Length: 127
Image (cartoon, rainbow, N blue to C red; front, side):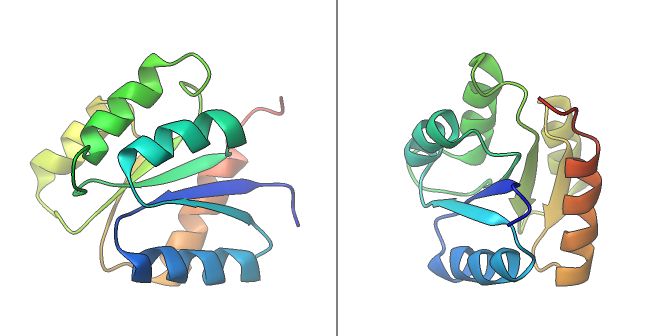
């Protein structure tokens, strides 16, 4: 393990499975959450180095989760990358305005994803 922990929040099991397998192969520790509520609890407990957050989820969408993560001082500094099938510019702009560090459109290439992870985690200050 490289000591870096990534949380993936998505209500689609296929996406969670892909991220888990892909990221573990790259020596990341992976935490998954399949709902916004679960994501908020796990973010506080696990303190991941990066969160990938789906926007379209039942009950609590990614926008609401992002807002709550940024309001909580325990999780406010964790970088969040939005993950969505929504490709409109207004969604990307909203994500960045609300505090996301990146906006990744589905489908994405694994190589692109890895580069973005390395870039985001590489910018973090050691605790």
